[in-house]
Length: 112
Image 1 (cartoon, rainbow, N blue to C red):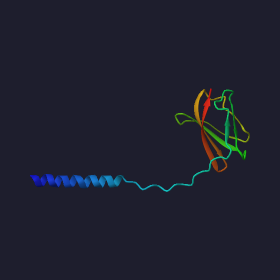
Image 2: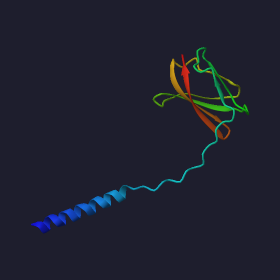
Image 3: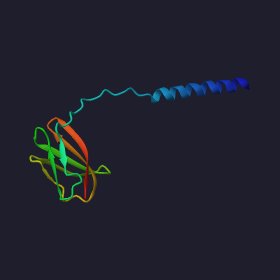
Image 4: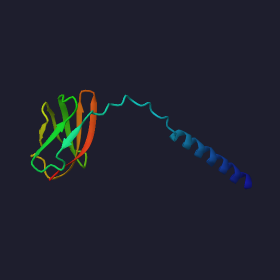
C-alpha cells in the first residue's frame, strides 16, 4: 500500500514539473522602438475652447489619433498646421497619440 502512494507521488511530481516547464516562455526580441517627438508642445490642456494646439521642433504633418478612456478610437485625422479642432468631443479625459514622420508620442488630453 505504501508503494502505491510512493508511485502516485512520483507521478504527480513529474506531471507538475512538465506542466511548469510547458508554461515557461522565451522573451520575445524587441522590435525597433519609435523615437519620441522633439520639442512636442500640446496646449491648452485642459481644452476649454474646442481647439488644441500641437507644435513640434520640425512642425511636419502630424497624424493624430484620439482614444477615450475605454480605448475606443474617437478621432483620427492628419493636420499640417498646429491647430486641432476637438469641439465635437464631449467633456472628459482622452489619450492623444501623435505621429510625426518616424516619431511618436502619447499624452493625456482633458476636454472641459
